[in-house]
Length: 207
Image 1 (cartoon, rainbow, N blue to C red):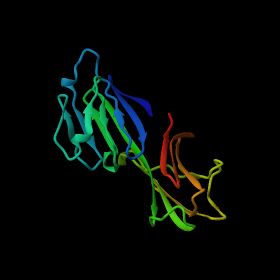
Image 2: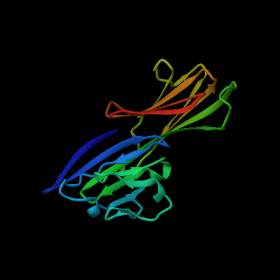
Image 3: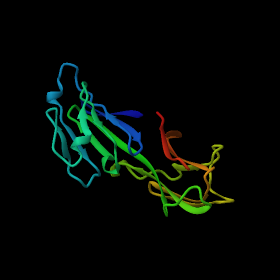
Image 4: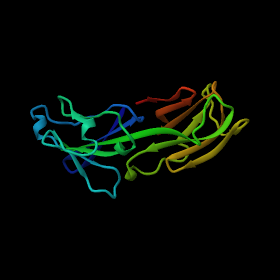
């Protein structure tokens, strides 16, 4: 899902769209192309962080050759479609028509890799991958919840590793019947949440 912010500098208006996804999703990045124009006039640029130079992913409506070009396409309104997104896709995208799209990804991983049916301790890492100049994640913006929706900090069977930047750690006794949820909260709104349990990870986005 997305949230749009408008900033003004003189007569120029820049649209900023923030999308939240998990690995493996299909992401659709909108371009505010005038209805009178065709996709042959559309360029899409991408950079992972502020230290990178822009990479041209689409030039005049044509996807450019790159290691991920097979996963990229344009729809009929010139939105950039990225299939089976991975960590390398997170970052800032720019459509020719003054649109900035920020693709954020929430990922839960574990160390060590364990069999969730066994009664073992495991450290879960909840990470929000985002464009670096978007700033670090605010303190306590990554929350761990149990099956009832109660926040997990310290207690029987849980040990919080705290949040550093956009990564939050939780050490748990992983059992097949347990499910742990990580939420990214910004401005008192849940932007996305991911669940980790015996069947793997699921993710949900919110406006």
